[in-house]
Amino acid sequence: MTSLRDQTVLVTGANRGMGREYVTQLLDRGVAKVYAAARDTGQLDTTDPRVVALALDVTDAQSVASAADAARDVSVLINNAGIVRGASVLDRDTSKLREELETNLFGPLALASAFADQIAAKGGTIVNVASVLAWLPIGASYGVSKAAVWSATDSMRLELNPRGVQVVGVYVGLVDTDMASSYSGSPKSNPADVVRQVLDGIEAGADEVLADDMTRNVRAEMNKPIRERSLS
View 1: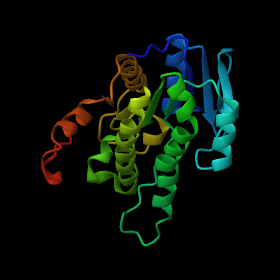
View 2 (view 1 turned 180 degrees about the horizontal axis):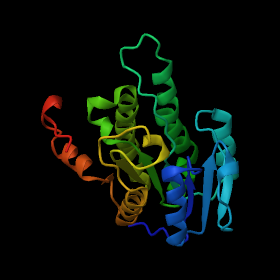
View 3 (view 1 turned 135 degrees about the horizontal axis):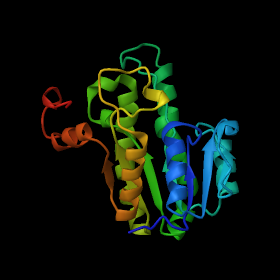
């Protein structure tokens, strides 16, 4: 059980969408400080004195190292930053897939590695935001990157749980944010509802948060062949 009250939290991709919602709800839960991390810190709301803007490019090793040096009091890391390129996995040009892997997989791994020791010293938490598309073939290259996050999160949990670190994987379908604005035809979750479930999961000691009905249904059908899994 991890109470978020008085914790120091770092949220990546905090300048919009889900990241902004994480900052808002963390403040409501009484955290001591939130490092709101983004490439462009000019869009961050720092009117609350507990919010500290942190310039961070998760794909840049020096930027990650600088963030770790500046935020030595972090006890909870929320790896929220992500991109969608949606290229075919058969494209000869793999640049879009590589871009997704750099941000969606190697970014969270770099942050977790940089902060693991100090989070372990505080008995803290690492959250990796994945997707239901880790388990479905409809996300093309994006799904590949999120499937990798799923596997990496499970491996991270096995390595860090003995050190007292809670590792949470977050799985969700479409969320009503700018990232999903071009997608239609499927229901979109409210960002506030998703974030509430994630923060509840942290405080409940959960390993996974399945944040919508589609995700819960797909997770329950993982024993079925891929073509037989329900999307409803």
